[in-house]
Length: 269
Ligand SMILES: C[S@@+](CC[C@H](N)C(=O)[O-])C[C@H]1O[C@@H](n2cnc3c(N)ncnc32)[C@H](O)[C@@H]1O
Image (tube, rainbow, N blue to C red; front, side, top):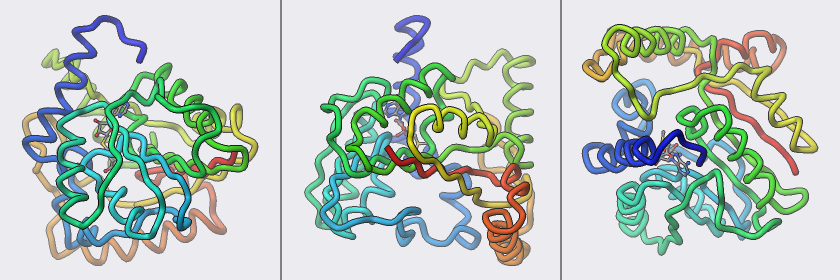
């Protein structure tokens, strides 16, 4: 990873290690981990991409194994890689509890410990936004390098213009400028055109879909993580509305993609 100094690297990994011990679902997913009436039960969620039985699959930044579990359930040969040992320990616990014998590795997505052309599928969900632009580019290069020709990558990033992310970015800006809070895992939000350009420069094919069209409902700062603005009784109708907008954005009205909370890139080597 390109870092200014080793203190930064230690602090960066330290936040993930500490978060894994304190509350791994929350540090990896934020409000999605606690609002089960809106998001459904995390432990039941299917992977957000098709899984091929027997396919050698890398989960880059696997966290506590949230997605690796359903991927293994569906018969893929999955490997989980993460920069945080504590996250990997949570992953091991979660996967073993569900009768898997996982292959888990500590590593850095910007320099993957695998040979060229190794994997059928590589996915990396909600990792790139915590890295600098330069490190994000390195991760994408590495994903491309370790994929077999014709292999498919799925990359999920938060997008720049979703109302929820605009509020998040504003609060992050205030906490950095006003309170001098230097969060090592601070978020960068990707524009649709930016992530498309990065992927098209590397991969032979690239499709992007947008997901989650929810209002800004979480006052997200270091001090107020669980502060939810929208009353619970509105969650179910908002979910239905989000699903309808999502279908339009990924269908007849692609302009709406700019406002989805996350963008999913499907890229083919
Ligand atoms: C927001 S969490 C997402 C976890 C998981 N992908 C999920 O969707 O549940 C980000 C994860 O990426 C890991 N991570 C961050 N930077 C990384 C890097 N350079 N290489 C590998 N893993 C990294 C963190 O330790 C953390 O587990």
